[in-house]
Length: 301
Image (cartoon, rainbow, N blue to C red; front, side, top):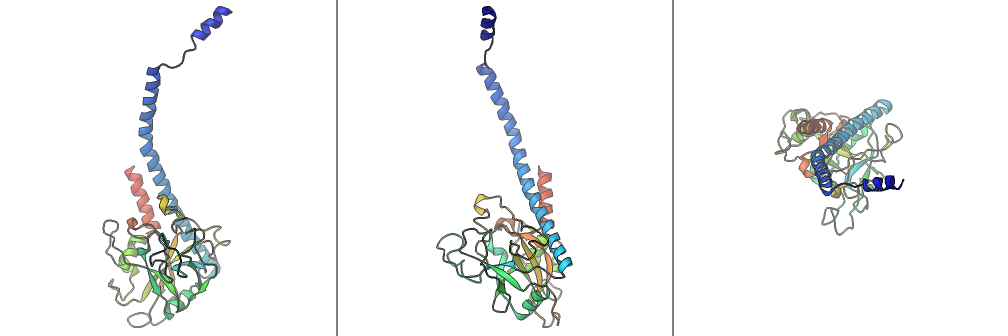
């Protein structure tokens, strides 16, 4: 027995330094192969989640419209409801003033603060949109605590956020008009989003394209959705605490009934949901553009 035990002890040797080095080199090589795949997988998952949430949100609005014969009330206005008091960060240096685009948006350049007129109020009211929740520039959480507590009734003394003309050079297909911005965001041709008399010069301003945030205070909660979805930015400094990560929706709103515009009042029309991201995105991202971007990422990987 003594000899047997001694024999086993002598043969219980560990890995040699050469063997350990070879194993480490193999692991490092595998890691080098897997890292690009994993990073690509994360990006694909991020893109597909955003696209899926956009499609589901469009479905939530359609279902609400079908069941209640109107659009949901108490959407977020994307407008500072009061003048903030912060001295640093995105809500300072003038951006915190009341009636400006919500200063915690990832990029305020996609929007223009616009004073409501009577035609716009009637158009929104005809769709069932009578109240909005204004955004709070002094909040400590830009997304989950983004609004003031009391809804604001839409009236000609108030403001809304309308889609702005943006330069789409290098990131889009069309020129820097409102119609071109919408075509890049939601698909189709600029003429489909024209706000004038059949041209895309935008001089007649028959319609405005108004944006709202979809937060947990809207009327769909408990009816056609349980919680409002969040678009999580890929950059940590643009996360939901620091910047507004809610999805937004765009409505085509009648803004004039003088010639050459329609003499009646058109009900506000739901265009679609979108992600309002950083300026490098170039424009709002609707489901069509987001799906196309996802396929491009899949093909490149």
